[in-house]
Length: 316
Image (cartoon, rainbow, N blue to C red; front, top):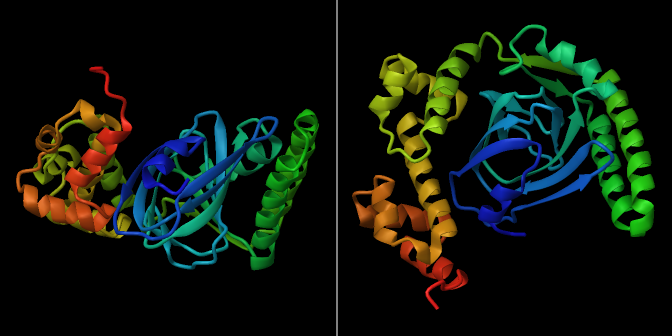
């Protein structure tokens, strides 16, 4: 897999929405490994973008970079370091903003798993589970050890005979749970989110994003978000820039570009390009086409022709 569109469909353990925000030349991809009850994922985010998500209500999710980039990722407005372990409770809303390509490893653990029950009270004791999350700073050698153990788990199962995989998956899961417990006991420091620096912005932006999520087919304007969040535009602007690094106007432009991209990708010959553009509020076709080509590497018309060629012709 080396396609942004395919990548957005492949994530497990959370319901996510991706907005690509700048051109990229690095690969996109995700591999997942289902163990006995836990799910292990390895991802490569090929370029800058925004990831909104809600974790599975039955799983605690832990995420760490496997690439060594400090200050390339924001989590709900907080800057992440390369060795930070993110802990997301079940049903937790989160927003990652990437300024470049990153690679990551994630573990989705059943909420009743012992390590999950050990860390969850610490995460949710000071904030509602819907927004509470932990940013845990690990010593570099501890982070490297965890990433290597996860990679070894993938290799062990991939290299084993199919008949042996259930037993190996069981043993591997037990070993990984022990590793995660060791990591938790040897953490260097931790930050609970939201905190006093992010809570105000988080409330406003989450209300805005929830409004956008509930109206996926609608043409949304700034005035609609101002009305939904019940704040002045200046307050909305400060919240978006602190939380996402973008103004709300720029966010809506990215949303429009990405919605058109996915519509073209999924509709193909089933929809006329001009109808797709109009449905998403595009009025200046030439200017929009230039932005689309800058972000996705081709004109909307080229993407539509390519997508149409890949779809079966049902009229025959």
